[in-house]
Length: 261
Ligand SMILES: Cc1cc2nc3c(=O)[nH]c(=O)nc-3n(C[C@H](O)[C@H](O)[C@H](O)COP(=O)(O)OP(=O)(O)OC[C@H]3O[C@@H](n4cnc5c(N)ncnc54)[C@H](O)[C@@H]3O)c2cc1C
Ligand code: SF4
Image (tube, rainbow, N blue to C red; front, side, top):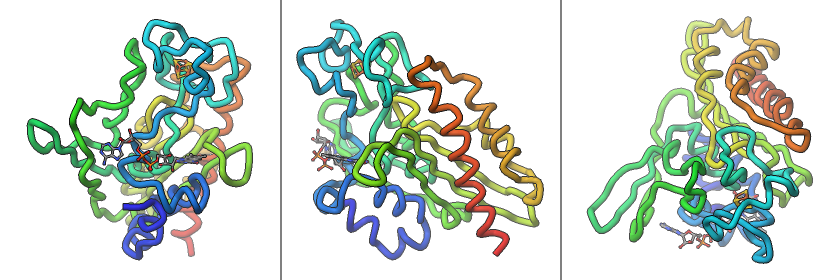
């Protein structure tokens, strides 16, 4: 499935707008016509040192070191990083699929299995060369999107250095279901902050059950801060914390605005 076909599919646009928006926020039209679901999820990091073979990189060459620890850090992680690797995962689609609780169907030598999208990518730990939990010989044959009442009210916002054709500094995917003027379900995933799409489960838990008229920007920011307590930053990456907090408030505000209309 090409990214452009998936983004234009009427069922995806109607029932999973967050997925269509994430796809359209990625790369350029020409690249989206070529890129595929499996290939996009399994693309490797855009860390400049991973690509520059003259520099140390534990992901490219295990045990060689990590040039990003002291170098260019704009795309470094602030959650879940390790001393071995501080890069982030670049896929926009992966963040949206984490927010809709997608299942990745995998076929390998031992048969078929399903991997929750939130568990497909690894945190780097001491094995940053392993991006995912897939093993040798396994192919992604499908990605299943579970239909639920929150996915149709969903959105994706990507913050980047250029208005298009740039990877995320941070991104936010969110789904919201409201029943009886109360948040029945909310799912939030962050991109650009970790080695994998980061589900903000503490923020979600804080927001579930909140009355919609109390769900203002301050409430969303406070919920995001519960998640961001674990953030580790330095003066090169500290900007990401307010950026992800504010972007989360923007996205939830947009979805709440739709409820009010
Ligand atoms: C300049 C540029 C800018 C970009 N900007 C963005 C962006 O802003 N946001 C974004 O999300 N992406 C971006 N991309 C990524 C792009 O959208 C592609 O997804 C990416 O380049 C991978 O290409 P592909 O999808 O053709 O996969 P391929 O290159 O075909 O595959 C990538 C890897 O996955 C493996 N693979 C492919 N399919 C499967 C499968 N089904 N099962 C198992 N393994 C598989 C391949 O063997 C390969 O190792 C950008 C890419 C470029 C070059
Ligand atoms: S952050 Fe990761 S990918 Fe980048 S140089 Fe360090 S080990 Fe390599």
